[in-house]
Image (cartoon, rainbow, N blue to C red; front, side, top):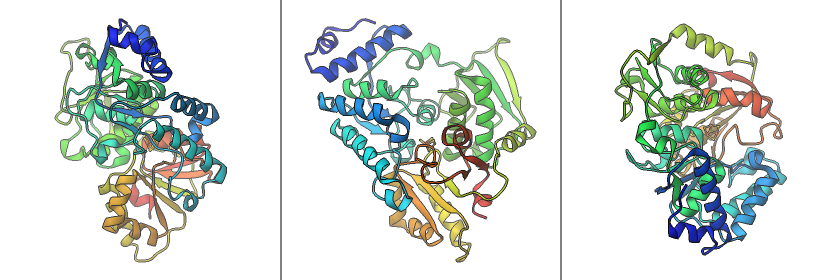
Length: 397
Ligand code: F3S
């Protein structure tokens, strides 16, 4: 990949060691994937924030990068951390973990990355426009940006997104190129698709079939396709596969399906959805924790939970309840009284983190109930949890 004169000077160290390292990283990625040049991006979304996922090696890398003067030059946002950065004690996060997590946050803020700590930046107004090039690295955020918003991003890693945050650029390949944004097959959905778990289960099924291929859905009714359900679909496809872009007829702003016999159609029925849901249950009894908010809850989802809990009329919950969301949405929830209603029923609105990147095992949890296909996929393998996968009514009932 060719660098222009200014980029070459950055690589040679004109803007310091950190910028040079970031340039070397992007150049190496560009060379591997056959990019012709670097192109500007308008924002970066940086994963690799939780101490649980990056550990001491990650902390060391970030602290070193910050010490060497790394600074974001474009709007850059963080993915969830391993705990609520203010109320970690309320969550029961061990002190040692919290100390390391706060060091990670300090390195990132030193570099000028906004501590949004959310995997759903699109719920807090960070919504790149159709055709806008960005460098995002959390898999559901990537899927949502590409598919529901029509923005252009590759599946960035934590380090490449951080490099893009510093340089404001990304290598021009993959989903930044129009000719690559085409569906490879069609999924005809005959299932009813009326619940959020239908979307999570559909995503879990299709992700396994797709791998990293682009696909197009037909048969999902627009009236059923709320942003919350579509984010759940995209998140699950990115968890069981690595789908970064899909089209959905009459729902997504783009529809790019080549015509001809080469395009195969796969059908997904209600029976398959129900079987997938059953296969995702590994806990038949009581759970220690109900965790809603993978991807992070919108204010509408929090309102729904608060109303359902109010309807219990003081009947206490028998398990812990976390409602995971961004700090900004939690503040709105506080203002609107939803957080108070949830706390009154014994739950907690947890900001900055989620059930997958928090240290669940260290906190003594072994079984967790979720309404997310992505969380149901990851919790057993990454967090040692037995899982119940159900809709909110059942989870709170
Ligand atoms: Fe977000 Fe955590 Fe799920 S980062 S997509 S809530 S696994």
